[in-house]
Length: 112
Image 1 (cartoon, helix red, strand yellow):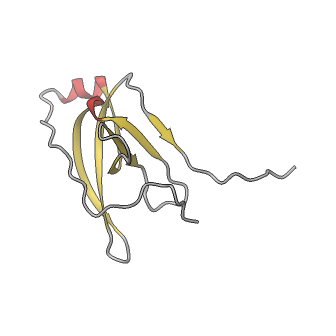
Image 2 (spheres, helix red, strand yellow):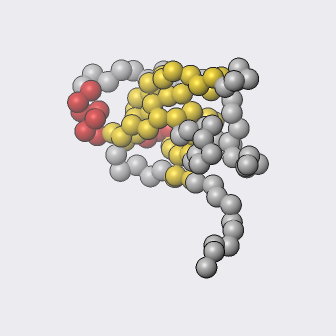
Image 3 (cartoon, one colour):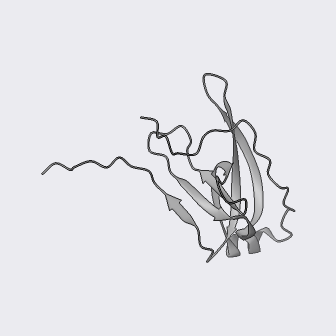
């Protein structure tokens, strides 16, 4: 069931080029990697949304401040059967940063 308020798929997302870290071991010690489809935040240009698995039935997304992202790696794109292309990326976010994980769900009574 498609959710009306969920971030929409995009054809192209421009990612600011980040310089490769000089010490990758230090990057792993000070940052955490997250992978997904990056999208512009709907209202705040200082934030980015990262949809973890855009075509899954149980997807969710992260919301990060762009100032907390130190490095971005491009991953292989996802292509649907209809030919729609979703760019994927791995972003490295500084540890101890504040972020949001949003999981949409349908409000429903549970069985007793």
